[in-house]
Amino acid sequence: MQKEKYPHLYKRRLQLDRYFKYKEELQWEAARKGFYMRDAGMHIKFYIPVSPSWRKGKKEKYHLKPHQYKPDVDNLLKAVTDILREKQDCMLYNLTGLDKFWINAPTGFIQIDITEIPQPDRPTHLQRVIPFRKSRRKKLQ
Image (cartoon, rainbow, N blue to C red):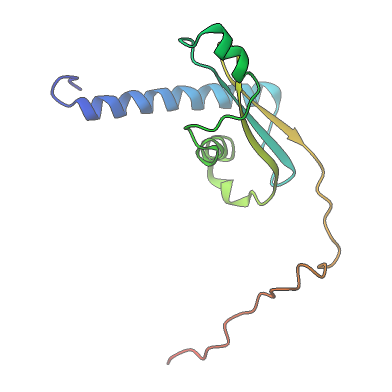
């Protein structure tokens, strides 16, 4: 692909190359550690590195502070679930937490804490406030 003739396509290709490299690294690391993504009970924390161009004082000021800029936390979660769950990301139904922070380090990382989610034997009163009902409309024939 020619950079001069199709600059927007070249830029998109670079983005895809970065994503595929990230995907391979994340899958390799998960396999190395024997990690699999559960359906529930995970607190996921994303640690985003501060920019190397920032001055030392600014880097220290932002260290472990909430990251409130792009990329959005939902986009980060979507990428991780797409990579680690592959075709089963619809099975994820409960996250106990989802955070993203700055970190004063050359590279960022993802921390996933796993907790047990108790399964209720029967619905609680809060779960019965809005009952789920099948449509009572008569089907048109």
